[in-house]
Image 1 (cartoon, helix red, strand yellow):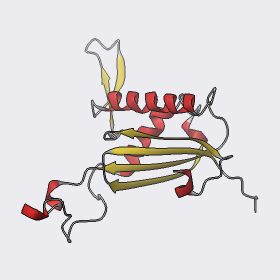
Image 2 (cartoon, one colour):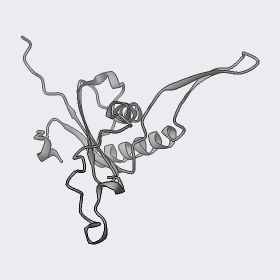
Image 3 (cartoon, helix red, strand yellow):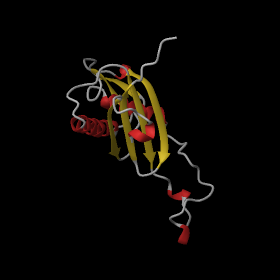
Image 4 (cartoon, helix red, strand yellow):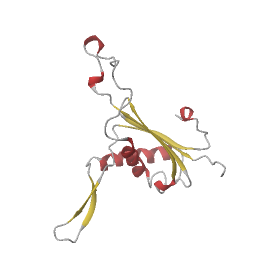
Length: 163
């Protein structure tokens, strides 16, 4: 994947792929117990916790395989490509069942939006790959059709001269 992005090996931190859908980190719901002694915040989507755990586990394994002993410091670039399964209606019927219809859209333009999915990845990898997602100074998000997965590449941000 590094050759596709044109990243120098010295800048690359880690690159990995997680199969399955990326659940969006959507709205939060605040709650308070009836007696008023406890309060908290929960995600509107109950699948977020499981999805975040998968992303974090795969990120930790990738860091271990890349021989990265600790959390990465400094400014980072994050590239995320999210692949969604193409709907059945995009395919032909009969002998054309394996072919995509000419009028099928080339990109997924329906919910969930890519920013919420990207935020899910950022939250899952905080404390696993980097210390704080505020370290991300460059981010590139894409949504494509394909086998459901997310491809994640983390690299050090290339220093540019100050104007």
